[in-house]
Amino acid sequence: MSSTAEPIQPTPYIVTQNQAAGASAPSPNSDFEVAARGLIAVPDVPVIVSHTDPSKVVWDLTAYEFLAGAEWNEAPACANPLLWRQGQLAAQAGLFQVISGGGRTIYQVRGYDLSNMTILNGDHGLIVIDPLASYETAKAALALYRGATKDRTPISTLIYTHSHVDHFGGARGLFAELNDQVPTTLKVYAPTGFLEHAISENVYAGPAMARRAEYMYAAALGKGSDGQIGTGLGQTISTGEVTLIAPTDNIGDGPATPQKEWNSSYVIPWRDGLYARTVDGVPMVFQLTPGTEAPAEMNFYFPEPRALCMAENATHNLHNILSIRGAQVRDAHVWSTYLTEAIQAFAPYSDVEFASHHWSDMLKEAFWAPPATTEYGRVIALDDVIGTKVRALESLGRRHARFEFSLPDLRDRLAGADWLADDAFAAYELGPDQIQELRTWAVAWVTDLNARLHADEDFDFDGE
Ligand SMILES: [Zn+2]
Image (cartoon, rainbow, N blue to C red):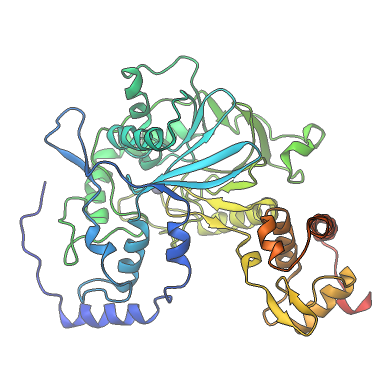
């Protein structure tokens, strides 16, 4: 159902409200740079059409080009400037490399639907996380990945982060390349309760929710600076065929992993309630987060590339609690509790965080700060970092840091030393031996900081 109505001019009240919202817009900052990072292939088709009716466009990759050419702070009077800016960020479409490390490379296809599709290499096949909202967009997203990487490896595993349709609806589209035959060996992981909630929200309540979603996402409205400019979470939702492949393994049906079964390959320390699993050869640690953004949802950590998937629990917007389309109301308190737990359990051991919407965040960003010149010479970030006793340094940092000083931040910056290219150290005129020594020293300090932070020690900075 397309709207044929002409746009009307906004009322003075709307214009005033939009201007007020614009006053709180963040400056361009690094969001645009971060959102573009890792792009390795742009969309290779202008539109994605229905696989049952090729005259019907289910996703238009050119619809938001009007945003790309505009300035972030020059929203038209009828648009909320924050949504305008968010639209420019979220409209960036293509294949992105999120991180490569520990023998695994994580990719995301973004801008092919409301949500992201994530792909990484398992031991025997590809692991696909959240195959978008419809058959056609998932098929096209996989084709983009295959075309750009020349990787023909079959899919061994699907993981659904949660029970919302934009995270499972395209499942069967991934097997279009096999004439829609889903391999009997396919493993499908989901949080416990997934199927029950996927069906109750999208089948029983489906027609009512789909209708209200029309108003929430305005998928049928014309795209343009005086039309639909995005939903904040992504641009809009695709309108292809919704499919589902039922899970074969529910995370959380059994007991959490006991401490005695924990091993060093999981990298993070054991905590009660985490589920360590090996998924097609890839170690993963799952945190169930029921009753948050969805009734069945989970975050998970990849020890090998030190990457954290936050499902839809932490994206680049403040998520709604009461959804207009009628999804189950979210419990903000429960949600915040699980976020805190995720930060404590995973963040110190993660180099990158990604989610099933929006762009990914490098958590070691601070370490890339240019060297500062001090009376002691050029230093990494905090003043006087190199060559002084560790505890004394922390004390100095606390007294003299230009920013609020925190031990977790310091630990994260130091952990980045292991990850930084030699060239970055060479900029400080260090030779190979010195670089190695510096890395070893940083790792030792990180280990020390981790042990003390983990023990929740009450530091007395001046008492050492
Ligand atoms: Zn979603």
